[in-house]
Image (cartoon, rainbow, N blue to C red; front, side):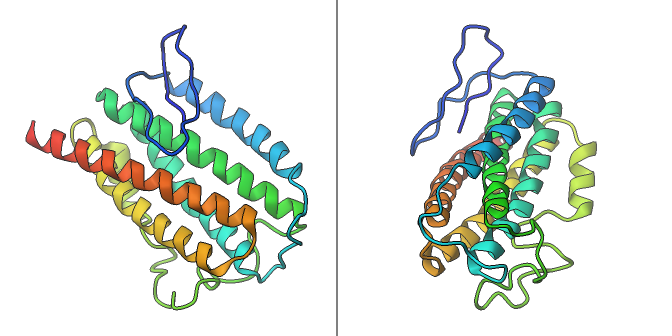
Length: 222
């Protein structure tokens, strides 16, 4: 994750295995610029990854996971950008910025791997078909934990503190769904690139969940 800051002398840095101290923010325009830059850098980085473990096929569990998780992450970035731009709570602003930067970077990596494997970013399979026992988990086209169009519309119209509670509640469910998907691919795949990324997702989102629960309790008491 990266800490989002407005201080000119502040340094943003990735954190390995633990949540960063979240105390500062940049504006929405800066965050959007970083997301664009991250897409370019992440794509280039992904293309440089050697083919150490063979190339997964179009109907492989790896391709299915990368496609579905890219879509899942994209909604998390969207919700985080809404909260980052509209919240007046500094903790929410910083958390949402961290989530947007982290998950956008992971999306760029996943899409780069699909290109490296000469696979389409969408594919022909229905969502979640790569995961055994997932029948019925996609509802109205939404994968586990994803917000409905109505919930997203409500989030866009909300203001703090209601926006903060809505964002945390939606992101909590979103992370739980994402963690479940990431844990499944760890057990299904023998591609170390993919399982390493999935393990990073699980660790990062579990750390976020602890902070989300703390912030929800704090806001609801105030």
